[in-house]
Image 1 (tube, rainbow, N blue to C red):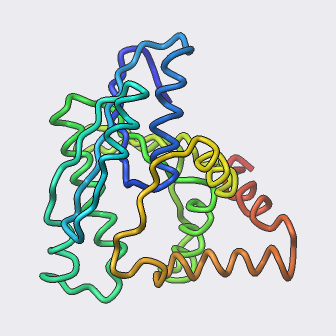
Image 2 (cartoon, rainbow, N blue to C red):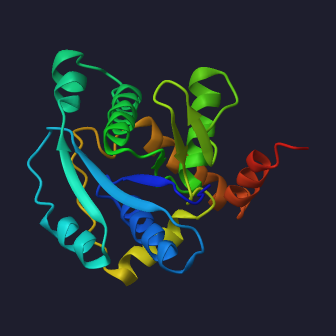
Length: 216
């Protein structure tokens, strides 16, 4: 994923996964034999006022350049477009904004903090709502912006991310989305949990293995 001379822009949402990714990439930078630059960016969606002083302080403590960039994404999604199912549009706009910022910063890589459950949930969302077999991979090249998306945590189970975030006392921010906890993704999370409890205890592990074994 990472080569000598790369410049990485980490997308920080304020959640456990993105903060853990920022920490992990900085830690890896300290002992790996690859020379790369690291910056972190948080998109202010303009939904609610957030106190992110804790993130600024944490980034400074571990030696990562961090900045928050104001956007009108929240206004576009909820007020102008008034999307009934806003997640897809919001994600698309956030990716586009982050890629553009990465270009402005001179970064050739954009790092996102998706975990294993994100991969599985996206797979079932595509299957059930789009009638296609699709999810995201660890490395994706975006031709329009000429940046490469990397997702170093996609094989990390979410429960481990939660545990590590608590142990490190990461400055995790509360969710600030008006539809938080009421999305199709949350439904998929409950569905997968149901599979593990009532059918196959390691259903999530088996599903992830089936998704990743694309060479067979």
